[in-house]
Image 1 (cartoon, rainbow, N blue to C red):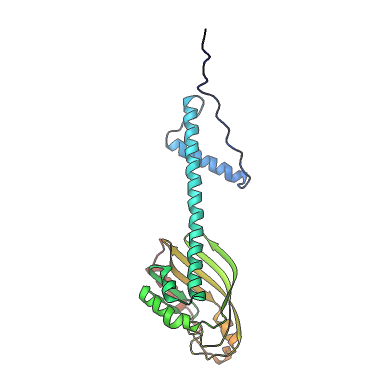
Image 2 (cartoon, rainbow, N blue to C red):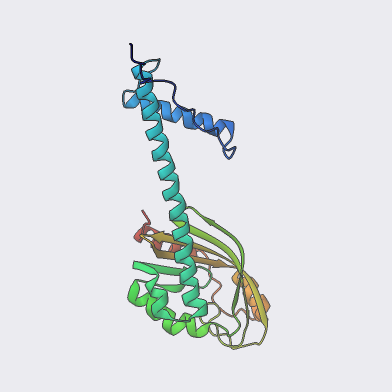
Length: 242
């Protein structure tokens, strides 16, 4: 009586078809990248044991790719979460210590139109406690427009709305309260490093602000020129994100 031979090898299950999220060009590019990596580690072509080895290597490459993509998604979520916590500490809690807790070891912030800001943890905290937070009008509101992030930077486009019920020292120093309503588009470029805010570059149209406050014709306030660009370059060189 002969024993029935057990099947020890055979065709492997086919990989599940693509979900359609990537284009044909993207899939072809990823396949080419896999082939280059397999060639670099000695993967072979053809049938037999070499082919099975190649299939195993390809499965490893795909697993690493999935892991890399998951990490990238987590980094993007982390960057947004850190920035949201920072905004909440500023505009909801009005707490300089909570705000500083969201920032790194050597942070800086710069409001380009007025050159207001600070550099270093001690100076940044002092700026928030003495100049920024006390200057926020009572009804200040942020209206989000768009957001872009890659895990290391968050680019926010928003409109800052408020009633000019006090001197807003970091935007319009020296201008007494006018009671006027202000709606001012902003762009914030936020660097994230090691899960903390590394820097903030804040942009708005200073002429638009003074126009809305009714004092542009008086020539009031810091309408700066090229020195804003000089200051921005100086700070980014001194505190590289990489």
